[in-house]
Image (cartoon, rainbow, N blue to C red; front, side, top):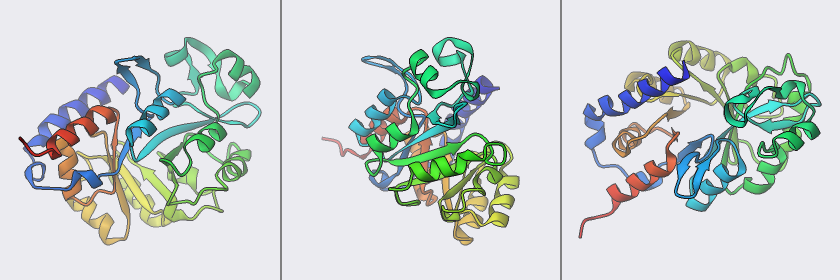
Length: 268
């Protein structure tokens, strides 16, 4: 499924170049780029693993506006940064489940998985933190207090947002204003928008191809902020700027940033 989504997104990045909005002038220097799981993949210095400090360090060094990162809880309730609940795909430990492992053991086995507190100390107020909640507070009662404690020195909305594919996952964070909640759509865009409006959350994020101009206008008219991804081409970023999109998420944020810089540099 992940591979299918990846190739469909690449196809959309080329097909949507036919959109007139890709060729209108726009100030892309003001585009808020968000690195999806950091700046990961092949680089001149080797392969950088997603959701690790090197992936986030590179974003900070390059002046990327924000980073998206995924939160999992260890067996003893410590929040760590990992998209997957298991450690096979990235680290070669398929039988190691984060939720079944104490933090000390996880750190000894896979030291590259960051703790949320490390991320906040290192990047808080330097880059915007888009924190994806992967599990329900209803099933993990300690999740809310632990995260709100860790984020206590940061200002919601200004320094960070919480986002989730399941809007209810955010509703337990009662000390954080709903304006700092982002409901994320995959192919269920209309359902997510309906839940967003019912719950009063502040923003919606989804595919740039599925968040149609009409849906974006409806969200903006309701006072919502909007993020789109996964954008790979600078002309698509220009289209999003012309649509008043607040945040542009990308898996290829460094190449997108480079391309935007080239497009904004006058010839000669």
